[in-house]
Image (cartoon, rainbow, N blue to C red; front, side, top):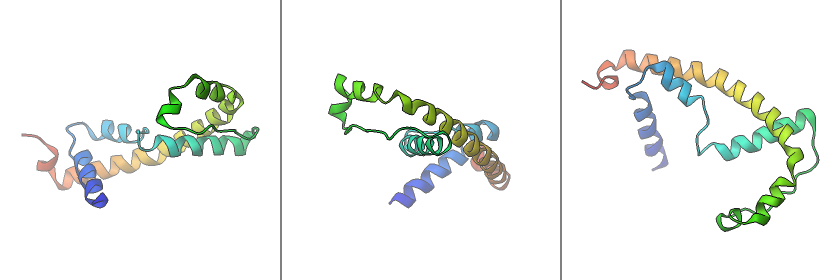
Length: 121
């Protein structure tokens, strides 16, 4: 079922009525499903490069996210922002440099091979 959903999402992406450059650029930017792993990887990369004190992550749930105490605990971790920012810059630059040309190539080839599927007459 997951494979079918992914194929459907890819097919929709390949058939968007936008120029390949615009679609590839949008693909190179994060989306809601990838934000948690990207945030974790960004922080880990930055921490590896510039170091930081250990993080004390509070338990998170939807109800906890709405409390002032949760946000006080997050604010107390302000020293984690620099490693996160450095890691985000590195990760986003590398990811975009790889994903944009790869998606642009894929879109152009798909639209050359299936011109009717890409145009909405």
